[in-house]
Image 1 (cartoon, one colour):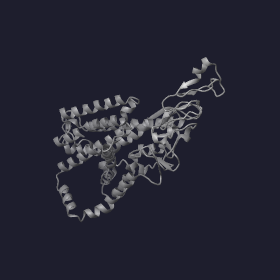
Image 2: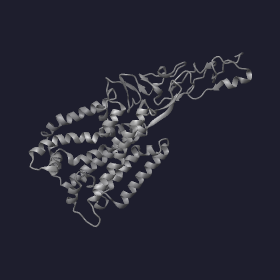
Image 3: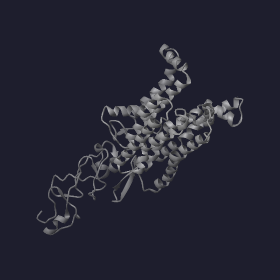
Image 4: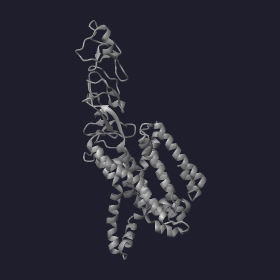
Length: 443
């Protein structure tokens, strides 16, 4: 420009709109365009600066541009800001939230898109239908079909050792599939087909989609905080119906006191309580870990930089309520990561005094509800199940807490931990049966 009040292509006017300058001052007012800024024409200003598809900014008064986590949600364009840059029913910072009546798809080929709440989740509905069919249709059919009767007869006539092998193998494969699915989710790894199909299958088999059935993203009352509270209290919520169901057996039974109530609880599934908690322990910890996964900082419309919760960008990680609630979540993590494993370790240890060899049947009676944690292992390595818990937690959130911004260090730590676990398993043979040992090592 003859008055030096505009910039050539690949630059934009970064000074105030009414600023003028001498020739030698022009370079100071013209800033080179950066990634995400479309400067294919001359005469651009901060306000009119066009953005490429996949980029977002909070205000036309700011030239700070951010890459959107879901590229297709950010439409780009000139002279636009905030929600005006969003499409596909998205909104908010980096277009990483959804408009009312829509929810952000968390997995699958549509990951990152905003789907209408009325469409629901196909995987969730399919899983619920399958479970209902198993209970409503599957059981009556199993009483008539000869092949099913043969299978039931096979397992019914099986000795206790073989039946335990099948249970432990199923538990090992469940935990393996769950850990793989959660690890890829925590690290935001998106595998190409057909590997993504395998991950979806593992998530499906371990009832991952069922969480969205109980914690619908479209339910306004199920906020991030409410979901976290329900998740952290899940073991108590599971124990409550067991206790209610046990009351009629306790009243009608001959036993009284704690022993009588414990026998009634066992009839209602309490003897499998530790196994059920362990099967979902990693998922609960991952949910709690996610509360501390914040991203940013990103500028808002006022020019202030704020950090956002990765799973819900409507939550700012410096808000007073978030910080106050973090105390509760930290306490729950302390319970799940340290108190419960150490409590189980001390309980089991107290039943195995040094210098005394206790018969397996007596140990099972002493261990009570925790007996299922030791049946797979030799008496010397009764504690090894807790080592498996540590390995799973390192993969599913523990490494993120230690190295939140260094993916290479996280993966290195996970490789070291699992290598040590496998090496110990091969050298010391803590798993009693050789076939179970092979399944554990491979998983």
